Image 1 (tube, one colour):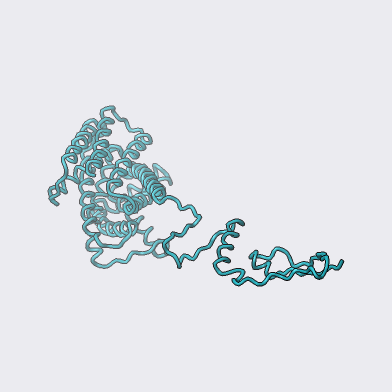
Image 2: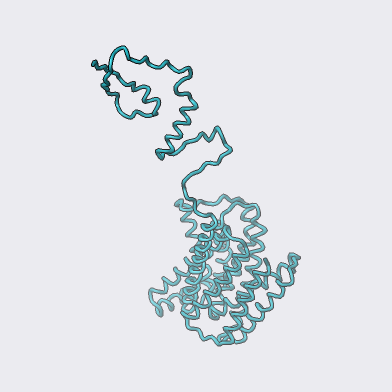
Length: 389
C-alpha cells in the first residue's frame, strides 16, 4: 500500500472561516491503489465567497462570538444611533438644582438676619449698616471680575440709565428694612413684610392698570388681616419699625416693576445684574448715610460696641455684610432657573424659616394671638401665589 501526502490549503480555510483556525498541517491518508485515485472536483462556476455572502457570514459569526455590530450610520439615517450610556433624567437634575438654590437661599438669609440683628442691637446705626452691606458686596464682585473668577458684564450707558430707578428703589427698600429691624424684632419685621403681595396688587392696579382675577383680591384679605392681628398683639411694637417694614414693601414692589421693564432684552446674568445694582445703590446711599448719621456718631457707636461685645463685634459686621450680598446674589441667580410663581412660594417659605429661627435664637416672647396672626398672613401669601397662577 502506498501512502500519499496531501497538503490542506490554508488560504481556502482562511476565506471559508473568516479567520485562520490552525496552521496548515501535513495529513497522511492511505490510498488503496493509485488507479482508484479520484479526480478532484472541478471548480464551481460561481465564486466560493461573494461580497454578500462574506457580509452575511461575518455578521453571523460576529453575533455568535459576541462582537458588537457596527453599521454605517451615514448610509442610512432612518435608524437612530443606539448608545449604551445611561443619561440622567434632565427634569430630575433641574429639580435637584432648584432645591439646592432654595436651601442655600434660605440658609444664607437666616444667617444674615441673625447677624444683622446682633449688629443693630449693639450698634443702632442702620444707615451705616446698610452702606457696609452694599460696599462689601460691591468689593467682592469687583475682585471676582478683576481676578477672572466671574466674567465681567458688558454694559453701556443705556444699561446704567435703566438700572438707576431699580437701584433707587432697592436702596430705599434696603435701608427701610434695616431701620425696621433696628427698632423691632426680626420676626415682626418679616411678618409685616409678608404683606408685600398686597402692595404689589395695589401698585399694579393703580399705576399699571392691571386687573386681577377675583381669587387674587380675596387672597389679600388673610394677608392684611393676619399682619394687622400680629401688629396689634406685638409686645414690642414700634411705629418706626412698623413704618420701615411697610416702606420696604412698597419700595421693593417698585424695584421689581422697574427691573422687569428696564431689563427686557438685556443679556446680563442674574449674578452680575445684582452686582451692578449693589454698586449703584452704594453710590446713592453713601451721601445720605453721612448726612443722617455722620462719622462722629459712627466712631462713638463703634467704640461703645467694641467695648461691650469685644472683637466678636467686628466679625458680626463682616458676617452680616457678606451674607447679605450672598443671599441676594443667590436669589437673583435662582430667578434664571425658576418661574416667578415658584420664586414667590420660595420667598414665603423663606420668611417662615427666618421668623422661626429668630424666635428661637433671640427668644422673643410671642403671644398665641400674635403667632396666629403671623400664620394667617403667611398662609394668605401662599394662597395669593396660587391664585395669581
